[in-house]
Length: 444
Length: 102
Image (cartoon, rainbow over all chains, first blue to last red; front, top):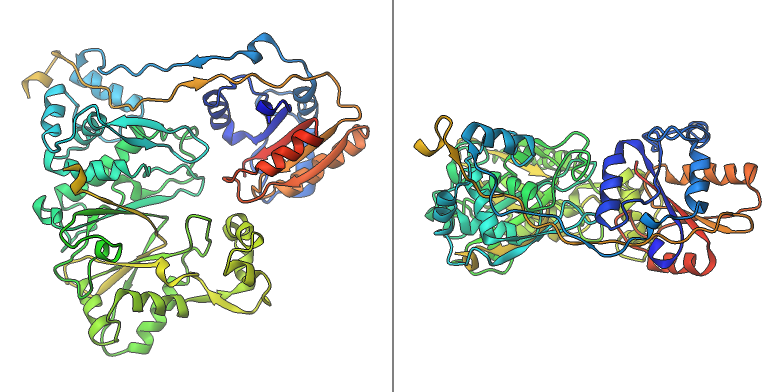
């Protein structure tokens, strides 16, 4: 509104002081007049909110109401009217220093995941760059912590530097470049502490010795571990920050972010076509597929004897996952099926395709529409879709509260990958929503 | 590795990407008074924002009744833009207060 000539005052809760001031600076208005009130506003009574307004700004100590009036009325100064461009320096090399000092420097500048890294010397980065035919200065893409934040641009060499830091081998680089080229950060800045995950399909899984069998989702494989970690470092260093309180706001954080659930699908043991073929890729293409969610739950799988009980358990456990849909992310679920479970589902229970299982889950995991609209994230993100007339949400808004609706609104929002080593018939499920798939081969 | 041992200094590459240029934006002029002016209180749809705006409107009614206060809820979630509302405020308003944060 300031650009349109209208004085504007954001009122921000005090926990977001750093992010508010940082965004104002990056948007070109470092002197923006911001009024702060105590945190939180959510869940506070009218009387407490009145106290906030009649009280003092916890940052400046000035009366809140008077600050609002002053922000709208006090004449602006010369500094408030400045125009022009500000450039921030990003030198190619750091000043020479000892190994210990450099490790400390990286840690203190929030350039790591809190663990020691491999220092990115020129020799190591050159060796890493042998993993791709792309030129070091080629631009890979841009990445931002979330939509209100600025996006940073980065080159092949910058991705290679972070791959070195993560402990990757040159042959992992095409996978890491494909992930980076998606432009999707793994450290999405939401107060809700999202995680992101990546599934690798195609021949490259075996070419770089990824593990899709026993312990695939644990810390037992160099490629799984380093590729997942590289995504975290890229998100910090190339994706505009991930500085807690400033460019990362997850209240509790998410432990999955250490490795971003980087797994290959166990295509060899799966009774169904692999995930990338479902997404329209050629079977011989190598592909990364990226997902967005919060958590993963475990459940014992099909036994072949107690079909009804098994179905009830599946419906019950999936009924605890988040039902909210946004414009770009319909509520969904990602199932991680051990091959033992997948084969049982196909051969004993008749789910001969992943799509058929997806339809079953869509139709059977239900909740009342009354509970649905009471969910806070549904209220924030899905209600606006309903009001815009987007189906099925618009129709759900008209239904009596006790009406049962699908927790996952579209059958195609239920995704399935097969992973694991057949030591037990376990399966896992996450509230992860599919984002996009990228060809790895174009980055070889 | 010898190059990393002891007090030997080494050179490493900067792992950071390139931040974009910042285009400085001048603030809108203020004219010293809200008397007779219309101020929009915009609820960005963070939880509790609706109640906060109601209380802020009441404060203006008690303390500055000469200010015309209009509460509006921004369309979409707090991530979405609402150009129609911004156009309305430019046409009919003299200032905007927007709440951000949970």
